[in-house]
Image 1 (tube, rainbow, N blue to C red):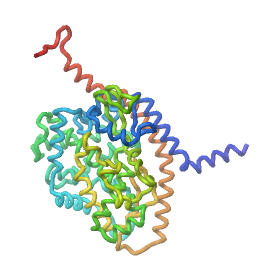
Image 2: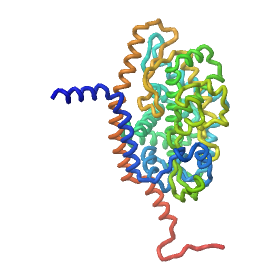
Image 3: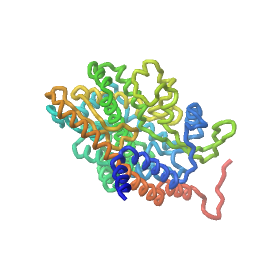
Image 4: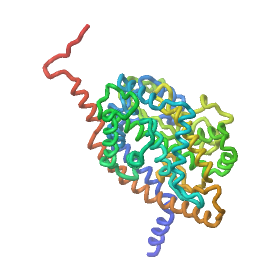
Amino acid sequence: MKVLPLLAAAAVLTAPRWLPGRVVDLRVRVFQLVNGDRVVTLPNAEHGPEVFERVYADPAVNGRSRGAGLSDLFWYWLSPGPEVHQEHLEDGPRYDEVARATRRILAGSSAALAEAAARATAAALDALPADRTSLVRLRDLMMPVWAEFFYELVFRSPCPRRARELIVEHADDVVTSLKCTGLRHPRRRARLTRYLRARVEAGDVPHELPPSLSTAERVHYLQGTFFNTAVVQMSEASAHLLLAIAQHPDVRRRLTADPDDDRYLGHVMDETMRLYPLFGIAHRITTGEVRLDDRTVLPTGSVVCFSYPDYHATGYDRPDEFDPDRWERLSLREAHHIPFGVAANRPCPAWRLAPLALRAATREVLRRFRLESTASHTRSIPHRAPCLLVPHDAPPRPGRLRALRAFVRLRDRWEDVTRSVVQLVLGTAMVLDARRLRLAGRYFDAQDTAAAPPAGRCPVVHS
């Protein structure tokens, strides 16, 4: 009779080792079952990286949202305004117009962009004590940095504290729901929408916004492109890069010894983005037939998912190892490395800006602190990257530092257990809610209805 309590106790005590992985597998199966799309994921056992590259660049793989049940889920997470989000606009004049506006706003000299990133980072770090170790979540630390950075790009003026708070509140809500660690809060997001609408209506945006968009659509375009995706992705990229440095002492020491070694810092960034790409899966809908091989042809309307982690793991020695020095021997052009997408299928518009700004922000952090972390490091970093920041000039306290490292390790392992269960419950609830609302499906249904001729009449065809 004593065996069962002992087994139960053993299961509880060892939960950090076995439970999170099993819950993640169950969550993936729930998502696949509920979404219902017939999905082809590349690369896979039959179709390797060469097929991934060819299909990703195929002009018929250019559908963004129309016709995929998976789109309802992404629109749900990215609302408000997913219909004018640059990533989800269908190809055509409207997308071209929006893309041109984004490129204009992101333009600037390399020196000015780097200086703005360093200045915003310094302002965030000034709030930390300079004489003792701080335990922070790196994503939380860096999100105000990028909120301020992109605000200044959009408005060409310093970011007020209230605006920064609204942007961070909004971006954090989006990424928290995306990772299924919390539900989305539309009212919280709407506060930023109201702020941006007032600024747009007052003529405070010194850029030419897409002329075909209404005022509401322009507001949603700015909110989705710059204060959602840009802030979230740069915060995630910073967290990955700084966490990787914190967990590899040799890398950290080399960067600290020569912070101006641009080449080596570039290698560290390339390796971080290879091992922890910001995009896990990019889904596209085929607008024509696409051939996978001599026997397999994807029909029009197929959903193709491109797995960045799987692609980035092909063609490398020891692909699971963090090794920045591998880039001394490899060419970025020839390696399986697409952190900003592929040129033939809408690469990230920040492909030039992001490395410049990341370098400047990272140097500012390393100039002040030594980074250490015993937390896990996964591509999704749902724990927001716990890390110790040790000021270079702080008096040494090795005993306290050992205790903090042990605390971070223990807390992370047990948080992973509870968080995995929360992600399963909340993720399933949001998938079901997104399926009920059908945000993308209803939008395209309404477009098709508006474009259809009145009943009983034939459309006029001009020769």
